[in-house]
Length: 470
Image 1 (cartoon, rainbow, N blue to C red):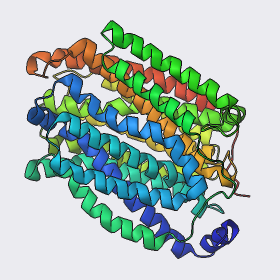
Image 2: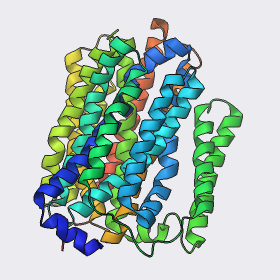
Image 3: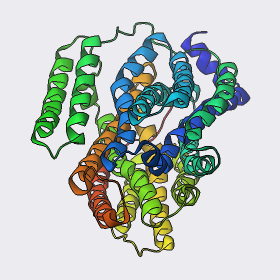
Image 4: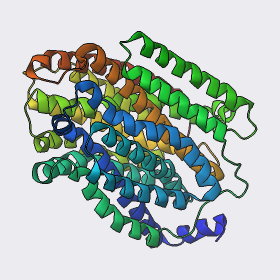
């Protein structure tokens, strides 16, 4: 079935289209659930593996490494070999890598599992939006993207809650292997519900040299940021930034680059959407990580109790995202997403004021603000970015959206690692260290206010866009 026939098939079969969207969303929910639950497990992991604060900060960074390095090649390979195939293989890798947790007995093995899950996430998230955009190419794309985003938020919502329950009953490893069992069923549904395949016949071969150079730059930068207080690692971080520059120069000189930098730079709507996404996700990644640690260490909450508080943010996201997505099918995305950035800024400013006496009501209010901001920002921003490229480039556009997200996450993770290293150091987080932990949170949240302010500028200045499937 060719691409035009596929579009006609889904356009004339609303039930088939809904079933396909449901199959995609099931995988997104399960993977998001597993990946967000790890934040609730960090204290338990630290206790079992006797890991210090510095080592624990690598748990989110390891997954980000796999995500960031493989998102661009996933987009290229999906265009060449098929978006559905890449999505399916990513879900399978997630299941297999999750099974490794049963033989994980130290922090290094856990980090390996996280890297593999990050690669699986790159394959799923890097093609998921492209599949949704292709299935709903004729109409209601913004609404469908909003539902897909809500699926991710629902998984993120349930992750801390379900993860806390699993930890209490079956130990922290269950938050990784239990979702994989459910993912097996979802994988069967996906195979049966999503018909056809989307690929670009004349897609260029993968730029392996560019991939190696990009992977080296990411690795050196993260390694340097993890120990930035030491001069040699400071030099490594600088070398990583230099290697990013070499990668950009390499890509501009290639006939078939991993990333068409000139094309992205010339597409104002796309590049402003990507930049806004980078800074928003750079601001938000540290919030769940730091909030989970704050609630469990400072307020002595159980994983389940902390998960219930964190859940409020993603419940608000889940409710708002389809509404904002539907609005972005009719109105300019920049107004919705810029308003979201403003709400982000309020939430982060509130979070910067927390201390050991802060009430839970105050915490709940700030996560509501952040949830509203995320719900208003995400789907309209993604809709604008996907609407800025032709249909045969949806895979790479989807990969770029997720690359902006994961690069923002990596940037935020690196900053948190620096703060942990310089403020807390290689010591366990005991009550005596709580003032230093609060200082880390204060600094990280004021930095986040700055990030979303920049994101708001890029969002508003991206230009005009009203979705038109024709």
